[in-house]
Length: 261
Image 1 (cartoon, rainbow, N blue to C red):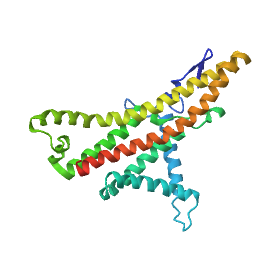
Image 2: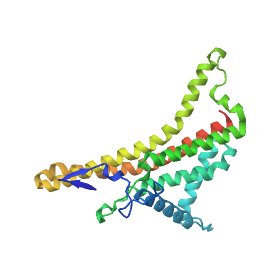
Image 3: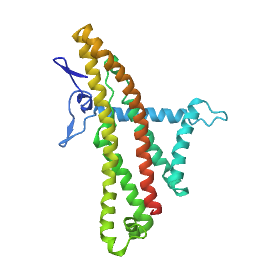
Image 4: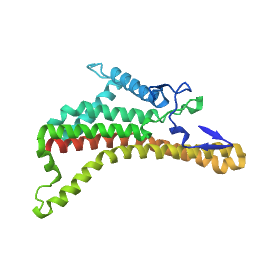
């Protein structure tokens, strides 16, 4: 948490910095290992351990295995409901997407600031959410054109559209389709950024109120701390919801490419 003259900067938590204090530049490109890269690696590591520990295939599953199986079943059922049997081929990708976003969101909420460390939420950066959105959108385009060739453009002309309205409807539907990766990436980015800024602002109220004395602390710090607890619980819910929404929309976009609905 950055503080200067008693003021806390709520945007400092999003600053991408090299871990060892110096930038490593090769051929004019900065290839420094940053805090953002570290938390992405940590996310993948925690996710790998979680999946490895829950894939024991015991006859009577324990809590860990049950948790993994419930998540895989949840995503599998979502794909089957939104796409049908053809969606099984894309279940591993959507599951990986869902789990990475979920774990990245939750790890960014860890209260390790009390020991002098700083959690970093990689999904609060548009570069990360944008790459995930573009990757999903690219898969949709590849699947759509590979399966339907030029007939894929019929997706932009709903069935029953009057002939005279086809050019206008085609343009509107095409623009709506092209906006999808932007809205997909922005939604996750905005949700995570806004929540973390609010928590940091409230933390500033708590700290500055305590520094101002008992009277101000009772008026400002205590209510702010109680509000922080409630918003933290809400943010944990948002972490799961945003991961689900990203995976859900990806499955719906894949359904359009596969079934041309």
